[in-house]
Every structure is written in structure tokens, then in C-alpha cells.
Amino acid sequence: MTAAAGTALADLPQLALSPLVCRGVQYQVGVSASADELRIDLDEPGAGLRWSATFHARYLEDITQKAGSAKRFEVFVKMLCAALQRQGEALHLDVLTYADLQVLKTRKAAGASAGSGASTSTAAAQASSNKRYIILTYASEFDRVHFPLPLACVAAHFPLPL
Image 1 (cartoon, rainbow, N blue to C red):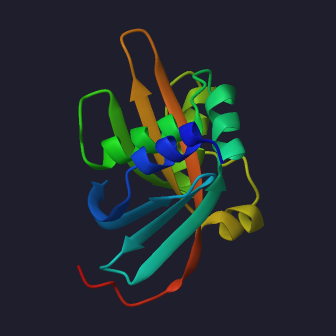
Image 2: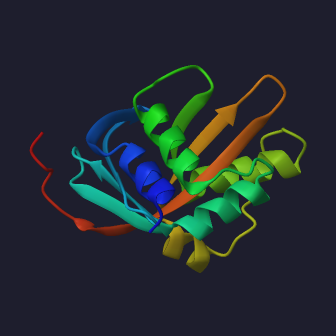
């Protein structure tokens, strides 16, 4: 590892647990990063559920490029942590279910009018119903970019002590 890479890693924020309220649901979000991986844990203490995912640096850099706003891994991690700590107006986090995403896709396809038909099969919807998606939104003066991060349900559990 080069000295520059070591410095960049040392600068990455590490959040043990941070509260997040989305759509009336209270969550606890844990974020940790290594030189080339980001791990996110999302707990819903009221329901005793946890979703989790580990993302490789290359994957995150690819999704930022596909979204039209390329970011280096270190920058993406800092953006995510800043959004969790509510630093500034430009970054926002949301937690969506698969059904929420389907509604947004339907609205977008219908030209922002609410649609009621689902375009996916019931089996596919049920298979994805346990997933959650953290959406990191970066809004600048001329752009609004969404970075979706899919999390898989790892199991029901007892909430971690704060």
C-alpha cells in the first residue's frame, strides 16, 4: 500500500451506529470502511430486523460512474458518512423497500403520474421484499444524483445496545 493510500484510508470516517428516520421508521445504521470495502448494517430495532451488505470499492466507483457523477471510493464513503451525520444540505439518505422502488419506476415510466399496475411477477416481488435499499442522494446546483445501495436481510435479531 502506498503512503497516499494509507493516508486516504486513515481519513475515512468510521461510524459505529447512527440513528436514521425514513418514512416514519426508525433505523440504526452502522458504517465501516477498509482500504477497498464498505460495510453497511441497517437495523430496525422496533421490528428486530437487520439488513447488511459489503461493497467493494470498484463496485461503488462503477455505480457512481453509471449514475453520471463519478466518485472515488474514499469520496463516496465520506459522502455517505456526511449524509448520516446530516452535514450540509447537498446530501440526503433514504431507505426504500422493493415495493417503494417499483412505485418510483412506475411513476417515472408514466411521466410522474402515479400508476397502479406492477410490472414484475409476484414471485420476483416476494423474493425481493426482504431487501432494503439505502439511497444516497447528492444534490448540487445543477444535478441531482441517486446512488442505490442494496442490502439483504440477514435475519431477525435483537437490537444492539447503544
